[in-house]
Length: 535
Length: 84
Image (cartoon, rainbow over all chains, first blue to last red; front, top):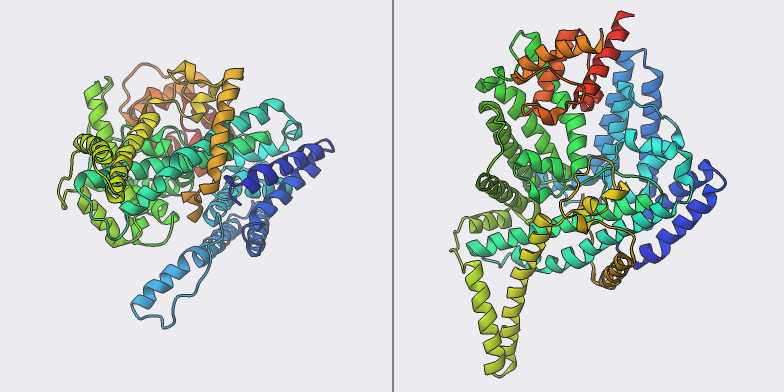
C-alpha cells in the first residue's frame, strides 16, 4: 500500500489510528497487538502471499535471538547461532532479490540452460533483513535490554518503516514501545505528525513527481545528449530522487509520530555537503549508520587488531604509509561501499555506484590523513569549490544508479564529458527558447508552430523548475529544521538561521498547510511509486 | 581510577592517535572539537584504548566513542568488570 494513495490517507491510516487509541485505553498489549495486525494488513494488501514470508522471517530470527541469548556462557555455540541466523537471512535475500539476475547472467554465459524464472521481490526485504541481522548481532554482543516478543514483532513490522525505512535500531525504538505514554492519545503528537506527513506528501507529489517524465526521456535509448543537457538531466534527477526519498521519509516519520513514536533522522540537507564524507553523514543516514556499525567497524577493527598483534604501528601518523593506508582505510571502505551499492539491487551498475563512492571516500579520507588538519575556517571560494567537486562526483555516480542499462549509463557519462558537443549554454537556451516561443505563438499560424512554441516554453520551464528546486534544497531549512521546536526526529538537529521558517501552530500556518495538502492530495491521482520501493 | 586519572591517561592516548597537542581534555569535549577524530580514526582509538587500559571494546559500543563523557564512563565500567 502506498502512503500517497487515497486508500491509505482516507481509509487505512485513520482506521488504524482510531483502533490504536481506542485499544490503548485498555492497556499496552491490546494496542500494540492491533498495531502488529494493522502492519501485517498493510503489507498483505500489496501481496498476501508474502505476509507469510515476513512472519516466517520474524519467527526465525526471534528464535535465533533466544538461542543466542540462552547460550551466553558458551561463546562458540553463540557464534554458531549468530552465523546460522545471518546465513539464512542473507540466503533468503539472495533467493528473492538476486537469484534471477545471477541465473540470467549465467544463462547469458550458457552455463544454465533454461530461461530466467520470474520471482517478484518481496517489498522491503532488504530493510527487514538488515534490521533483524542488526538485532541478532546486538543480542550476541549483550547490549539488547528488551527481549519481549511483542516489542520485537512490532519493532520489525511497524508499518511506517516496514517498506522503505528509515532503518531503525532496536535500542532507539523498542524502549518506546514499552512506555505507557506511547499508547495514550496526544493531540500534540497527532498535529506535529500530520504536519510532517503533509510536508512529505507535498515533496513527493508536488516537487518530485513532475520531474519524473523529463528524467525518463533523458535516459531513453534514443536520447543523445549534449554536455549541458546531460548535466541538466543529472541535476534534475538528483533533485527528483531527493524529494522522492526524503518526502517518503518525512511521511514515515510523520505517521510514526501520529502513533507517538519518534523515528531517527534520515536526511539532513545532503546537497549542502561540502565533502563526500559529509554527504554520507547527511544522505540516507540510517543506512550509513547500519553499514558503519555492522560492516565497516567490525572489518576495520579486525584489520587494525591483526596489525597491532603483529606489532605494526597503527597510529594516525603510521597510517600515512601506503600499505597501512590501503589495508586500514581503502580496503574496508571499498568493501563497505560495494555492499552499499549492491544493497540497492543486483547488477554491475549498482556495484559501480558503490565502488565510485568507495573511491571518493578513500580519496577524501586520504586527503585528511596525508595532510595535517587545519584549524582555520575555509573561505567562501574554497567552500564553493569543495561543494562543486562534491556535487559533480555525486552526479556522476548517480548516473549508474538511475540509468536503465549499462550502455545507457556509459552514454550519459560520455555526454557529461562533452562527447556529443557542449550544447547550448543554459542561459542562452533559456533566452532563445523564451523569446522564440513567444514569437512563434504570436507571429506564425498553424498547429505545428504552436506545438513547437509550447514545447520551447516547456523546456524553459523545466530549467526554471530544476533551478528553483535546487534553490530550495540549498537555501531553505529542511523538514527537521522547520519543525525543530517539536523534536521531530531522533538525532541532533541544527537550528536554522531562517527563524521565520519554523513552524508554529497559528491560523496563518494552518491555512498554508491546508492549501498545500489540498494541492498535494489532488496531485496524488497522477502519482508514481517511490523510487526506493524497488530496494 | 578516578575521572581525572582517566582523563589524564586519555590525553596521552589522544596525542598518540590524533596527534593531539591541545590543552587538557574535559568532559564536555566531543569528536567535533578534535579535527582528526572521525569514523576512521575511531577504529585506531578503539584499538589503542584496548591496549592502554587492558580492556575489550565491543563492536556495539563503538557508537559511544564520540565524546569524552561516554568514553570515560565506558573505560570506567569496563575496568570495574576486569578488576572484580
